[in-house]
Length: 477
Image (tube, rainbow, N blue to C red; front, side, top):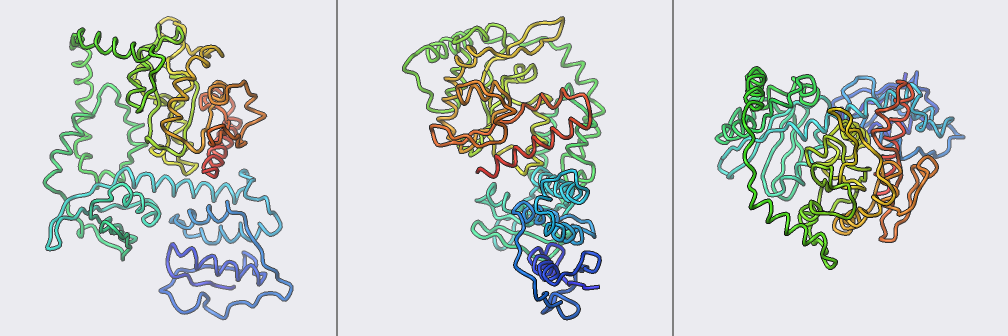
């Protein structure tokens, strides 16, 4: 048995060096082991195995290296062995990483997904508290991630809170930002972080005021906000009472009379927006101007039955834009894109593909909900080519303002809106298509298609293909 001693639990470079030496020395996975030690001068507990005389340099796919960098952050004890087994097999199976149904590949992908999810939860649930010492004001947070994702996630906080001096303490290590440099330190304990601060009551008041009892789904809430994180979230103390009172508050909301609309303001805004929408010389200079003007759009008849126009949302200068077909029933009521069931599928697929939804501009080819009434329900109807063409002016305006580098089109209607021609999504799917403005389009299916597949195995396979398409889009960036 050959044993490699690594310098730490996340010592990727140490593992890669040892695994390469094992592989060139023809050490099979059954005879190779990796252990985390206190760190020494060498990687091995005995002399490294000499390479075979006929051994030659070898390379591995970039996809394997990226996957390994995530898997090594997983808390499972056998992750090093799994990665070496994959490395060994790549010698005889160079396309192995494309076989997502392979047991080892599937296992590694699942662990990478868990690591990505842990990183996402860290972004969502870290709560900084203010402390003051001789050096001035500092913000400190304690967090216990499901996997060792501190070094992977800390740069996100450096970008988000650039002007703050902050520290994130975890059982695995600590990260600190002084406004210029991000540094990492030793593990910490919970007592090293403050338990509360002076602004916590304000945060709890805000959280309680935004808690909507009419939309409460306890299981969904716990799925997105697992109980394991509650002990470090100040607002979690309010959740049991808010849930218990939700039924009473919902009844009160339903019974309350609707407020009278401000007729004068509505007429004024309608006139302004109508003038903008019909002014041939009007060119929106901001996304906010575009959103206001689309409410008075009369370029096609769809505005008559829709609640409102729904424009895109996301960063003002996003590198990735995702274009869907049109707002659905929930989007039409809420005024935001991709908040319904298809939006949930898209969010989870983006997370698996390693794409942060907050970095993406999401929109639709058509801005008004096309439907037909069926009892109390409003059933989706596919927009015609003429309606897509009429609404393309708004989509082009969004593209001009956001300037995305890559545009993912979800389904044939979205592709028509972006490319200006009908396409067969199945034939052109996953391929980068150059656009006149220098961006690239990538075609894939709409998430609602995945929801309609009845067979579980087929649905899982198509969902995996959808995630692969999103990863290709990320690679184009």
